[in-house]
Image (cartoon, rainbow, N blue to C red):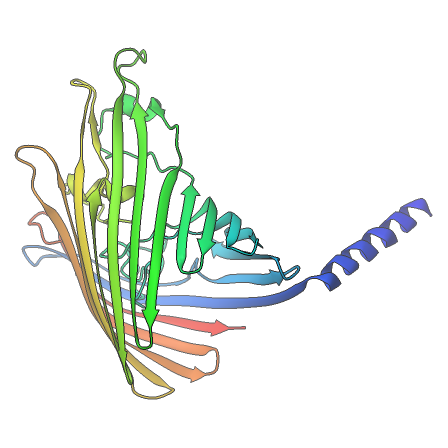
Length: 364
């Protein structure tokens, strides 16, 4: 009897809590179909493949309003058939601004492309995230928002170039969070977005953590602008920085002949001399869309990233992607996006990926 009373009381509390807050649930089911032809620079076909899979960007979640000053959101995605947390945060409106606590998109989120291409079934619909856009990810953070200005203290990203001395990975010291900020200026049919970030961490000198520490400093600056003229929208962006892999996804080529691009825009540590070789990065994007009707929207885009280790004899490594697609809305909440494009890794020992892809999506 006591257990029954406790159970009823708990259900009443949950019902009261649910009634007090406004829960707006949503979901998206996304499936990718993609045919990819991979060729080396001599034109020899290395691999062809047809794949179909549930995109990990499929999601279910809810926006929650607890009061006029308190709100929150949760969102789960699907990865390998398992639920994974995409977003989970609470936000307090204190009058002059907002404080967010939890996991959310970082202020450097800056995506205008709708590209559905995936490098593999483990990396979904990239929107040119590896080939020109800044994207700090969905990360734990403390974020302040004042109108169109955002600034966040974020979980540090103390990664190094894979070619770094092995000892470096075991002796990193982080004393400060990563900082990112953005400001959006919009007027009528145009907008401009400014973004910046800074991070620093130290590497202990020597296997016994003796000697002088060496610092790895990362920074990035980004600028994106857009203009809408009737059914046409144009956007362009550029970013640059040092060791900018701490702020953006840079490169996705697994070819061992591409050491600087495999670095993902990260610094290289050399234990023998206790020095850090910085990685300079620059990227750009250009995207145009045309809305022909409520059913058909056409989009074309190009994006590129170039990296180079700051040392004598270093070779620049770059990639370029270009594509054209159509967003076909079959019914409210039901769409398919066919796309054809090329990802060219440029260097002689690397590959060209020609693809025909489609994303199928139903929102519910």
